[in-house]
Image (cartoon, rainbow, N blue to C red):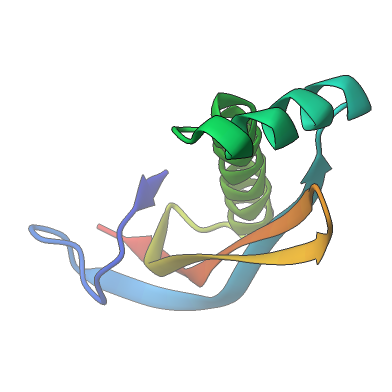
Length: 104
């Protein structure tokens, strides 16, 4: 699956626009790790637990978007974007979305 953030794929011709595709997930950390992350805010620096959580969430959201595109018969996604929002303290939603296409 080709995934680009642009509206075209260099060297490829878009034959068909299949439709809008998306994938999302809501992730939270284990309470113990959340407490450790809270302590890290006191001393400063990267909160690795949240970095890991968001990286995992982005991967899941993109994988779900790709699955949806494949089900529609697409071989590429153009105009891909990622967005996040806080659902509650310690939990974030990540959504990946774009336009599924058939490209040659």
